[in-house]
Image (cartoon, rainbow, N blue to C red; front, side, top):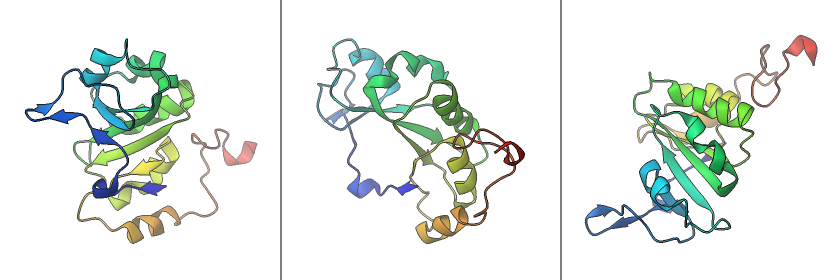
Length: 160
């Protein structure tokens, strides 16, 4: 799992003097909202990597036609008790075979690390009061793996 420090993040929002640009110019390492992506997708160069911030209350199938052009999908946890982003990540990996990075952002707690990993997240932006060292320990709690399958090993233990 890769841990993201927003002060040193490669991906940057497309903002102007008055806030987010509704129709940003193509540039490397842009982090776009879903609305910005819909505004630029028809003329955005196909070889220019882009990251999309995707709301957790939207249908992830909207991104399916564009996944080969997207390098990173940022999924939001507005509350730590709202697990819709887990389902979105699992769909991206299992159904749509998305090979790019999937980042968890928002109210991301150390307690969520195991499920984040099992559902397909590859990057995490921990909430400010959470410890990266504790998150790394949480990922190591079950070194033998899990009985059920997940996005990394779909078959259950008895079938492997």
